[in-house]
Length: 498
Image 1 (cartoon, rainbow, N blue to C red):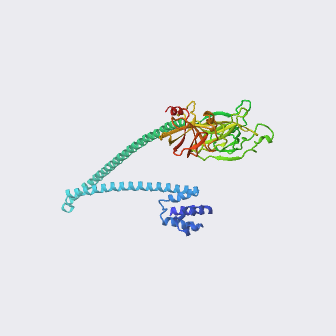
Image 2 (image 1 turned 30 degrees about the vertical axis):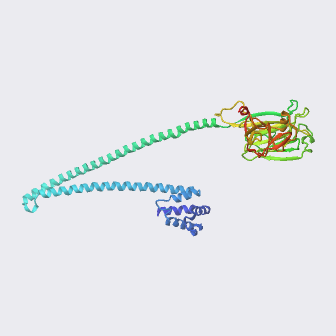
Image 3 (image 1 turned 60 degrees about the horizontal axis):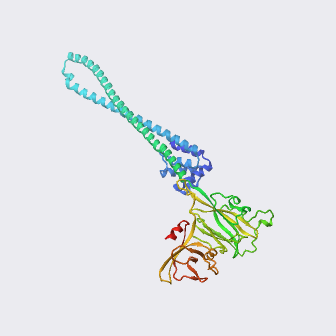
């Protein structure tokens, strides 16, 4: 009854909001009708349902404590915890008292048994009183009194001796219990010390090792400046620098390129970055409003080349006009880490330039482009991620594209494996004194580095191979196994030797 009285007291202290929260927290543990009735009487019905389902008892009401803690009724939960602690103390006290009463009963039983055995011995030794005379009877009476007193003293001595034995046994048990407790405590302290060493000291060493390893494995960005291409006169400054204009960080990446061009010139180029800040890429260094916009009146085409989320530019081809009065960039082409290659934006009728470094990807660009002149100069900045453990090469290897294919020669009907490195029709026809027009506007041109094969060849869409003879382009009908890959520039000498 004391526990239920405490519950009534606690539930009377609850506010309406607390009651609603309590009924909601109990959930489907009780019937719906008891859960929906949030009145004081409904709360008592809720308690009866919890008792009926053995979710709480007078000995175990942890479920109710947890519910009060969940709804932030901390005062109620604390009172229940105090009552639980008080009940445990009372239970322990009652157990101790019952054990002591058992010991007293056992001692009394031992004494009674001794008294009975002693009385039996006396009766066997002495005859009945009716068989002796009055004198003897009087003598016996005096002797009996003497004997009773001696028996009392003897029994008292035996009782004290028994109690002494019991106390010695209890003391021995108490000492044994104390020794066991000391051993357990000592072992616990030793175990805690070992755990402390293994968990804290070893973990600190492990943390130091991990932090040291993380420092070694921490990624750093290595920057590589490419060459300046086009008209890189020291007199004229750059008109754009994406790192400054776009306020780029190392985490920012190029996500696309916007271009405007015609069939024979590249008029404007703007790189797009993930930080989405406005760029002054199209502006010039003059101060008038009209001169801050590039003229694209003569441009015929425009396009935005977008990169995928896991894709970056790893190679750029440029085509440069080599006229004495104009060294502009007339065409550009991009390669990506996903194996994509764009068509040439602008014209490929110019001196071929390629820039790519092993394990580096495009970071940002700077250069100069002016009104009515188009793109005059470009310089690309490349980035590479590296760790402290990695050996950083002082000079990164330049990469270029090599294409190879097989065909059957009509001269000797032999199977030929030919390969070549990338170039441009502009350079090839001057080097090999060739005449005629280009093969195709989407064609890529290559110079032979294998022992057999055509001196120069063109590949269209990675499916068709053309050779140049008698100032015209002809298609290989037997060409097969066409593959193009990026290789280090230094490896081309080994291929030429083989």
